[in-house]
Image (cartoon, rainbow, N blue to C red; front, side, top):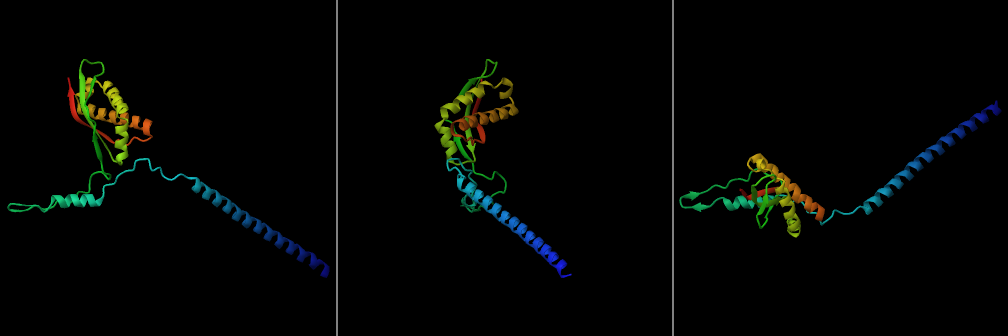
Length: 199
């Protein structure tokens, strides 16, 4: 009987050692894989470029500006009484707008027409001053793109409000296309007509 018990004990011991070795290999492999991927992630973070400081940033409306504007317009005393301050509204855009009016009016023939259009244009952007600076730098290319867009305009478009709105959208796209081509960033959100004549 003593001879049969020894092999059973050896078999159990071999099984336990085998299980322990497999567990150690699995745990070691998991730790090694974790360290490998952590090292790769750290290297990827180190290689990642910081946000480009040359890209224009959105300019949020600050609460201080809204409060000071309300304070400046309210509690004025004139003659018989005081005016109450109007609290700032909750509506409107989340970002401040910067406006820029292009100096000279644009004159172009209308497509397939004997008439021509003359418009004054201003633009707005919710981004910082760099967008306006880019527009000024590339004003010749922007003016050319605007004239091309105006030349593609039909008579039907300039005599209706919907047509004028479509023209505004095309002008925004034309200006942004030039700025993206030249600077890698557009940023113009709206075009406004400061003058609009069709003859």
